Length: 544
Image (cartoon, rainbow, N blue to C red; front, side):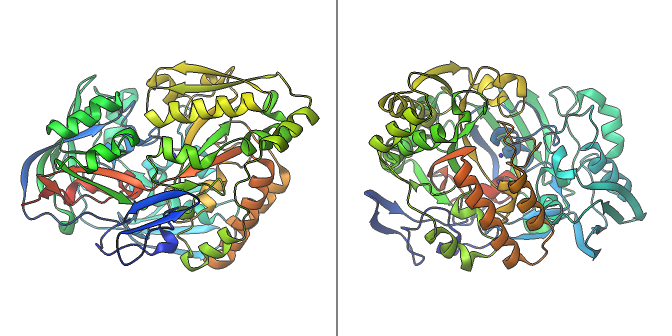
């Protein structure tokens, strides 16, 4: 399951898989037979004035607004404007101070955060170290069932060490933990409100009470979520330009595109790929492409079934015509993926990204060799169940392509269609994966560090959907996570990338830039995946 303040083009080395885009502006070029004609920028043009209200389209209703359980695009898209973290990821994918004005690492196993003074929650109370301690400790409580609990696996204690100081002591060095303080694990909520709301916290009934530029006004289940501007917001540079933001939920991609065209929705992230050309040519607004850290891939959910043999996984990977999948699933905007973690996930040391990826082989497409591997594995005719859904059009497109590829090489790939809600449950509920072999997923980084993505493949991690376990991988991860130097850590992460490509617990398919549609009346939104945590709605305002 994730950039801020400049309108210049992001460096090409950090712009995900959009290597065909010139840093000086839009460019039409050809790469591996895929024609591209777009530019990648971290922001849209700044707003020229304020607005009373904006309507924003989500492809699904958030299943929660509890920061500990938010592990998908819809809830995080809303929460990014309501709740904040100790650190902040910017639109150009840097980490900067957030609710903490600074942090210190006096030794490899200690993190000390100095909190920003005078920050108020939406109910008017002032944030203290007690709130931070309660918010972070809650992530570790088994009863909460946090999706981010594994981020705290090395935490021994979280203590208030001053009126505005909190100290985390660790059992072992953990560089990622600090970086994750810019994502859901670092979210701060009022301790008093958590206690008051109890089990209703984060629901339509219980709500939330955070520190962001917008407060939760109303959640009408099945209809909309409405936010209102918070006049007491601490960061005046991000004071909301719009008084109210209303989120509507439109699961059908065609209906969502029509909402953009009709003006029923002013904008929305993750534009349906099937409507990209129509929306770009409509004159009703503009599609912007932003930095992304996402790779669309096939997560293996059952390593004890047909796909338990790495030869079968490798064969399926070799049978995928990724160029055609990019054209059909991503509207031609993207490139075949070389690795589980995208180019855009390597923003920690951007000048090394090309070196790492140039050293990787191009994705191999060889049906004959794939058939041979399936025969050698004794897997001919064996069943592979791939889950699909109407949640997004590209899911069905990729599912059909995988089914066709599998059958070409002797595998009996069967599609199991589930509702959008059931599809989302696969990523948060292990029981929802029963009987499934593969799921199409967008694996992404919340931070600029690619090590975060590879943490998902570590034994026991929440995001390790197929329970992949390799002692060699775990040891390599621990070495990287103990290395404070970004360059050295990136080199160690490249070794994790090599192991993951060899073992294929996740089969990379393609990369594409992030997308956002803005109707003609609005502008100012960040365009990249950082919108999952950056308060993107604060900068939206009038285009004229």
